[in-house]
Image (cartoon, rainbow, N blue to C red; front, side):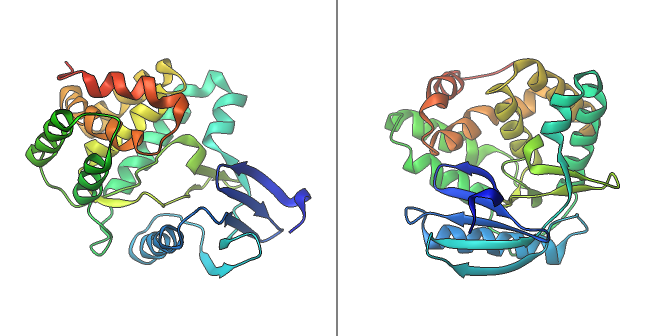
Length: 250
């Protein structure tokens, strides 16, 4: 694959594009099971929901590593539009929240459960002691059980606005079925890692539109912060540890 077709490079993965396709190539350190799980998630969401999702075309092995091939959507991400038009931040954030609420209306019964995924992540976390892991696990067990589709990494870089204004959701690697407020808490943290002002605007709009108390979403914050910590991004560690350390949020 020619370098001129590279869209971006991230740790362990590179995204290429042609006129009609997008190829996500994973390096040898990325587990085959994780690649196949991402492919399965995308296929399930495509088959079982009314969302605009780029079609998964193939899963293959290349000289560089495993590769997912999808149809290409021409347009810009919401993140790009937010940067280009800061005066429209309120409008874009409303579109973003409305789309996330549409995701939460969907049901994909055979996709993994968010509760099991979060529990596995908490139990694998070595950055905190056993007492903290126990408290996080206990809180998770006490939270209401739902079966709403949760993206797991819902942020403006994963929403494409095509040339006709249609919204597309990409990158379903972390998708699961569970409690929508856990998904919202993760989105809030992802915003807060970059821009607290955007995070606060997002949380206000989500709670208003979903008619959910801010305090309830806040109860998920230590749990999802622990989950994000398992990704071992050193630049995020101090920030996430502060959220885990706080017992309650008001």
